[in-house]
Length: 224
Image (cartoon, rainbow, N blue to C red; front, side, top):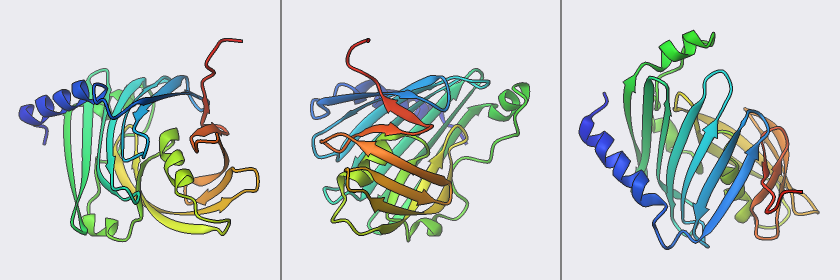
């Protein structure tokens, strides 16, 4: 159920997000899977990030997110909003002690927009059983390059690691649980194998994604 109060609170959060002085680094990626861009502002420790993505294609939409994490990398809150012509959805995942709470809001009709675009209807936002999130080690947004940066920044050693991930899938904002295995590479990259696909991701010296084949590439600072 979508509430006007929640809508106003979300708008206030989004308006304040880019004004947070702690978020002092800006990142921009060009999408490779669709016409679009991803923009994020982050703090130096990656305990806070706010981002916006503009996605083109047969169903153009805008995505906003706000992420807050503990210094050890554990997510405490992730709020995600998607919005297109005639529809808007929001999901908020919040960890309280060792339990997850998932709140969803919706207005308009995403399914009608998908049918007009010749696409299947969307699953509902959120997850039907929050207990399935108890075993996850990370929360992420599917195909969002910043969220591939996060495990890259927390790599320890050269041994593969396996993590269970709570994955928010736009534009529906359904939350699914997937298993992911990461293999650090000698050149500083990382091979990721998961239930949703495999990829070899490149990072810069600071640990931010520079190239995720078929998904995103860091935008150049200057035009060639």
